[in-house]
Figure (cartoon, rainbow, N blue to C red):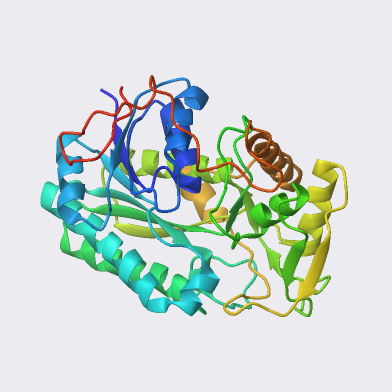
Amino acid sequence: MKKRILTTGGAGYIGSHTTVELLKAGYSVVILDNFENSDRDRVARLPLIAGTADVRLVEGDVRDAQLVADVLKHHKIDAVMHFAGKKAVSESVADPLLYYHDNITGAVSVLSAMRDIGCNKLIFSSSATVYGNTNHLPTPETVPPSVSNPYGRTKLIIEEIIDDTAASLSNFQALSLRYFNPVGAHSSGFIGECPRGVPNNLFPYIAQAAAGIRDYVQIHGGDYETSDGTGSRDYIHVVDLARGHVAAVEHLLSASTNPTPHRKVNLGTGQGHTVLQVLQAFSKACGFQIPYRIGPRRAGDVAASLADPSLGLALFHWKPMLGLEQMCQDHWHFQKRERNKPGSGVRMPLCAHETASNHLVSNETHPLTAGSRDVPN
């Protein structure tokens, strides 16, 4: 019998790519999403990409612990991947209470529901921001956390909550995957990162500037102690990241005993690129120079971040396969596909305005909660 995975926030950027890889690996998937920063149309594309429709959608809020418990029980969930949460560093600096409320409440809700139902395998979507402005590069998981913004602090607090939960429950096992900088898109061009409003992340901002949606790329800071003065990051292709989640959940589901109930594992490449290096690579992918301007630093940002990814290889035999050139090509392919849809207009990206095909998403009410939708098996 297939193992069934719940992905909270599974219609989002990382969640949708992971859902595809889970389906391709033979898992059944249930997505729980409130579509605050994702689109129903994206869910309709997942069976087309994965070649199987073994995915169901429940529309609802992860902060509703009773709803999460109902989903776990009704669908007989074997493991949870918790992606749902807010993720913009600058927004967290401007409104930290929003981040503490939404991210931590959502995590406590998921853990409470798992405890009550007896579901004891968790993959948590954490972040390399828990390391703060560390001078230990590349950064292994043994480096003490030192957060520099409220977003990173919520991730660290949730990791600590998982520590305490794992200590209190005899069979509970969790992996917190500390992402470095997920970028790119699926090679099909059907799914990728398309944020609402002004992007907070570099790749969608560059892509929108290349597409003419933005006049230029605003670079935050040109006086960092890096090779060219711009911030340096460890960028990882989102498909490699998704594959890392599949390897992680296979490790959890196959492990009969685990002397460390909660492990923290980096997901990165171990190779850094500055903003200007990314701009050069993206300009090559689209065939013309993308304009940019360098401005002041942004609150909460660090000069450089770089993963030591060796633990993921040792623990569940995962390593990234796709380089910066592929990241840029795949993101540009996605951006062009979105922008070239009929009715997209000259300066407006299409990501949130399409209606899902009726044969993929039904309008039937889910038995668990009014107003939800199913993607039929």
